[in-house]
Image (cartoon, rainbow, N blue to C red):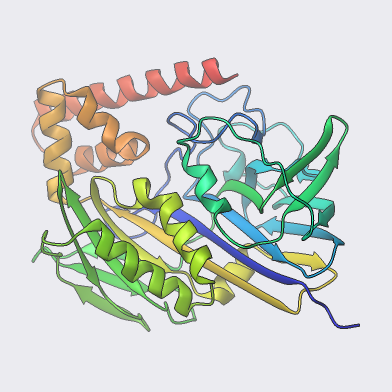
Length: 370
C-alpha cells in the first residue's frame, strides 16, 4: 500500500573542543532549564555535578506529514546516551535504572525513547499547550506539519512534532584546533564528507562568520572578521538546511529556535552532521514506514579562543558575574583548559577557586531541581 507519510527531523549536537581539538567532557545539563513546564523529563535525584558527557543532543524535533488520519509508532535509540527530556508523553524511556553522574562512562544499555501510538490528524484543529509565550520552544511549531495527538491517563497531549533531548559520550565526527597563527584547523573524523561548515564569532555587539564549505579530510579557516550580521547568517544557514532537505519553514523554525544560543557570545564551529553519522548514533524507526525520511542535524563545537579566555579572566578579576553567566555551562571546561596552560601559581589558584565556586553553585542548583 502506498504511504502518504513523510517524516522530517532536525536537531543539534553540542560539544566543546579541548586544547587538542576533540570534544571534551562537560556537564551539559547545568544551567537553568530553557523549556516550558509541560515538557517531561527524567528525575536526576542524586546528581552532584550533573550528568557528564561529551555531547548534548539538543531539541531534535520530528515532523510528520500525512494527508489522512493515521496512527504511527516511533522509536529513537541513542548510542552511548540517555534521553533526558521529551514531549508528548512517551510510552517508554530507557534505561529506567537509577542514573548518576558517571553513568554514561560505565557499561550501560543505549538510551531510547518510544511513542507506541501517535495519531496524526490533518483535519482536526489542535490545541497546543502554551506557557511563557517568549520561550524559544514554540518557534518549532511554525511549520505546516500535521498536528499529532498522544493519549495519556490525564488526557490527550497535542503538538506539531515529537520532541526529545539527551546527553551522550559518543565521539563527534569533527575536531577543531587553533593553530599558532590563530587559524582553526578543522578535521573530519568520520568516513563521510561533512556537508558544510561555518566558523562564527561574537564579541559584544560585533559578529562575524566564515563559511568553510564541505570538509572531506581537513581545512584551515581564518578567524572571521567581525563585520557580519545575525540576519545574514540566519539566511545563509537556512539555505544550507534547505539544501540538506528540510522544507523552508522547517529551516526557518530551526534557526529561530536556536538564534539565541548559536549566535551568543564566544566562538564556535557550526557544521552539518553527515546523515549516515546521524543514523548511526541515533537510529530512527517509524511504523508504518514513511515514503520519505529527512534528518538534518547541525553540530555545534564550542571553540575556546584566547579572546574567550581573556574575557573569563577579566570577569574573574572584576567579579563580573554577568559575563561569567554568558559562558554558563561551558565555564567548567574553559577554566580547566586555562588551568592546564597557566604557569603563574596565583592565577592557577584563582582559577581553581572559580572552578570550586562553579561546582558548588551547580550542586545547589541540582538539589533545587530535585
